[in-house]
Length: 243
Length: 243
Image 1 (spheres, rainbow over the protein chains, first blue to last red):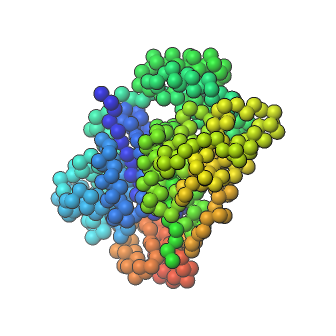
Image 2: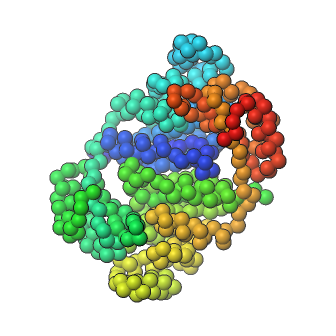
Image 3: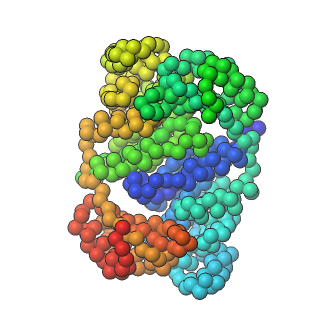
């Protein structure tokens, strides 16, 4: 059975303006690889209803899972829940279970549970809450779309809450070899090797270090014995240091 | 006249597997903001013909410019030129001008201009070459799609070659204020301020530092006087340190 597939949707003008360097997609990419869920696409879109809703609808139709990051806080520019509700055509309103979580959190801390904070208890339809052990305001899963916060520590905590209830596949395994030659030197032999292992993916990643060209070769697949076999042949072609 | 819009398309399995942290989108996002070109979307797709071609076609229809990164080297997994040619329905073959650039580069260095390296002289249709002062292998612009290398130093050099020939708009300007209070405390007053300045965008970016909640407010727009006016009112609402 092929692995489930996934897309990540990052929501936020601050990424597109170049102000903030996005980190959640990279983090989740590694977690999904370990879980055997094949990440097929990452998109970054602005804080706009139409941009978010149309990306949600395109991605949820194409993949087993969609993970979103950002736009679920209490301020005027947090419209992800609204856009996801619109994408699914379901109502968005304050839900008692989410409200109770937040009310308890603020009560314990002697903080006012004001209107903006109550806004974070809005959950579309019959979505399942995603636990937020850091600041209480929950994420939620509706259908195959999992809506999480943008603050990295909260995003990571939500991923840890969510992933155990998703069904993974065969973890994608990889080994790599660093070769101190440019791609142009190794391309022919590497291409022949890749053709001999059609069940594996062989990626070639050039770099420049201290003015010299080099290449990292990454062999990926789900069968560790096949990866070992390909790595042995690769190392024989290009004697070097295993990375 | 509204600013031109743009999308960035990052091509590479290594980003989606979580192995490599992508850097080119963040770099180009900053350059586009300075040039007055509004970045509206970033996508990351795998090294696959169909994935690349369909993303190119979707993005070039929706935006003034599309910038791609990755997949134009000499190895078997470098298929961006093939996919872009397919997306445009034009042939891809070795072009004399690109071939001459590469031949001279390798001749000067006493390196063999072998078949994989000649593959990097393949340019679709009547595309315009993008200069690569580092390793000679050119990028190219076909229609509104600008195809560049993935190695960050080469990507940045190509961006420097390319941007001066694109027409920009009004540079998006921004000012920011760091507030040592969580979003839930400031949301109501901030929302009212944002509503009073519909010509500006006010982004609210929460953070957690040493266990305490804080918020960065970023005000963006093209009119510096309006931004100053909004910043003055913001600072009066939340006396703090300008970031």
